[in-house]
Length: 113
View 1 (cartoon, one colour):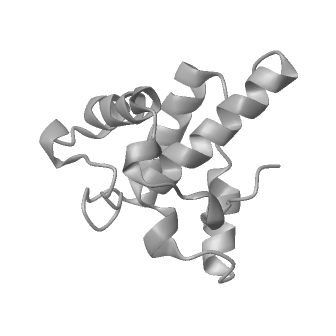
View 2 (cartoon, rainbow, N blue to C red):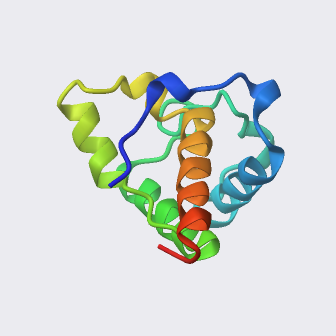
View 3 (tube, one colour):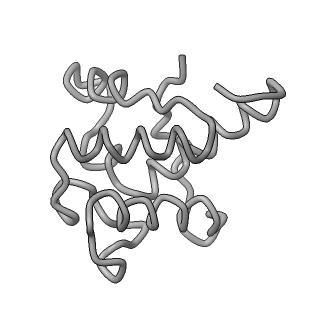
């Protein structure tokens, strides 16, 4: 289980571009979001217009592409319980950082999720 860690949100200068680009391209492919609208500061609901089903589609596509399991349901439960702030949690910056954590865990485990 991967818990969403808001304290790990880094500045965009520290963010490796490759994971962000994979997420951005997946948003373009799965949700037909214009690439120019997608930035690290974009909120997936407020700025990009995704609903929960679209977010699930993106998570599944990223799971397949990156060989990980994004704990979307846990994140939503954490938002609903007030454990994390939805405005911060569902920015691309925060999502990319959480995916990077999952990728490190996958690599440390020596395989796929």
